[in-house]
Amino acid sequence: MVIEPCNCTFQLLMEHVNEIESYNGGDQGYLNEVFTWWHRIPKHMNFLKHFWVGDEDDVKRKKTELFGAEPPILYVLHYLGMKPWLCYRDYDCNFNSDIFIEFATD
Image (tube, rainbow, N blue to C red; front, side, top):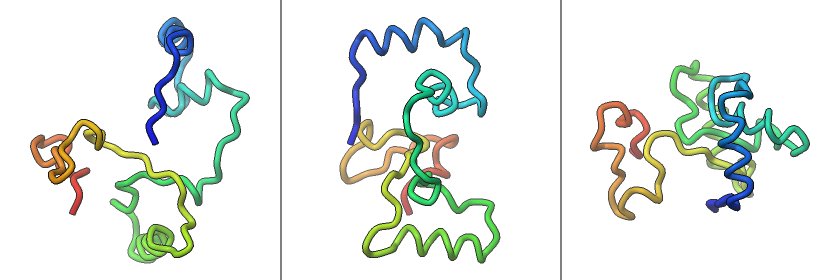
């Protein structure tokens, strides 16, 4: 699901982008600072698409189990690199860029 903000929400975000500092340097940290009232979902339900790089083998195994669990345990996957709606359905355009290739689908 992709959610598009209304113009007034977008305007609010843009007006404060230079005033509010993201605690983690990313957009999620900024959004968490702006929308302090929203409920954050638990970490075990919320992963990056590219979430096992740099982990030890036992951690990779556990995360892979979470990723493939039935019924699902993970409910939100964040896409890094080119967003899937900007690419073709049958081709991952992350392969087209050296800086995004690590985010390309296997």
